[in-house]
Image (cartoon, rainbow, N blue to C red; front, side, top):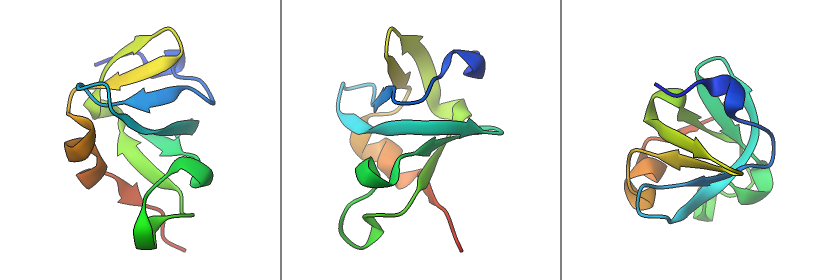
Length: 82
């Protein structure tokens, strides 16, 4: 598992395939909270989404690279309720 303290606000989150997944808002516990403006599509647009720290493969410069491809990683996002 990657050291989550290396993950910073405004870092780009990309899938293993290099596809843009979102932008880090902050780390909350064992999850990365993505910014509302860059999180979700369609009916999920405009809501905060979360990705498990467990999906992080590496932190490379200003990017967080996930162990899953972008299209698969999006299915693991957890939408904030309330």
